[in-house]
Length: 566
Image 1 (cartoon, helix red, strand yellow):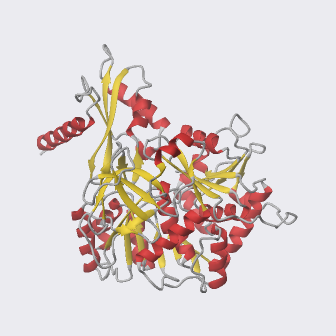
Image 2: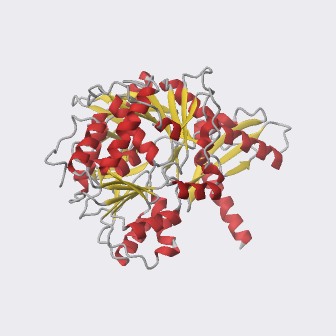
Image 3: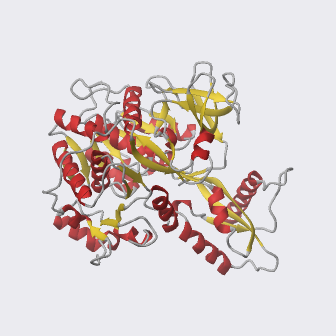
């Protein structure tokens, strides 16, 4: 495996120091390709160095938190490493988060500065109000593009236009931000420690309540190194990674961005998810590596433009974020082979609390349904739910993980941290994942299901309890229950069942009002796609709402509807 001029162990370095090493080793190599705009590692490092000074001019210093609420674009990537140079902490936030979610994140982490795109600026708290936020940097997906192309994009798409900035509002455009005069600033930078916080990643974890997982420089570097070694792939320098997974997610941030920086690869990124655009990039850019969630691979196979595509350049394909059906995996494997690639889909298992993958299927041996073996430096075990008692191989229980990428804990939440990070009799601290699974005699991991009710739609976790609490705020609703049902496009579709209070008529107008209320409170990917009003909730013997019965009932209804329409 080729690493940076003989440097094998980068675990003691900061993220920024890894980037600088790569630039020293491969200054002319391509760092990123954004819609045709290519930056070398020398260009990239110069951008990072300049932006770090601009953030310093805004008052960002060691230990400060800065919210990055952006799609995949150079501004996000540059800011991530620039903040690390300052010893500041990046707070990675989903761009589709609701205004209330963003406000809660800012309150939780105490961020004074944030960066987002124009159409999302209205979701941020008022500057100089009750929030800690004092400066909002507002950018556009077209800002990195040459002027002529940016002008065309702005004419074609209204949403990419940067909003008008009012003086004194506390907001500053990205272009003005880059013009900040930092010439007189102190250019001495703090020594960023490997075990110091580098980034907060918000996750519902095992409980569905959003919490900030605190990850260190060591977390990122250890995860990236271990995943690279586990891949078994060599001579990765200069190869192209399809960087379509989002930066606000641990899987995407490590796999699609930090691993390429570590290995001097090229990140080929785009600001929005478009199957057509992804397929176009795979063909035209001769992509070498793809990491994605299960529904991505189905979209590639079904895209007409890929029928005669030459995929011989593809050397590695990695799937995570959710379970992939064996039939879907086989279909994509056959597609790869038929189009000239010698690889197949390799499945990983991981969590935000462990940053990215902790296991990966072998390069040469596959076991149907398995998530593979632990990657180097990581350990897996299965325990009896609610205990630290390890179960015999083959028995299903809660998956526990130990390894160098483990989070320090949840920000401002010692109780939740203690509930998932537990010291076992072997003296190690283990992360209790909340996932059910088992290991075979040779240590291969098999994921079975989530212990808690988590819906995975388009690769994102959706927590029914969060949506139910929003629904139950409506005084017309007596009970609610949110379930996930199989969906070809999303993997799972979010469906809400509602029982109305006595005397409330079940009208279309009511459903519209309820839907609009929910849309204001949660991210768009988490919104229910269907609402069903029922007379009463099915109950278990313990009088809990029987969501499994609702899942069955919905499938029966869908089947009847399909027969009627046929």
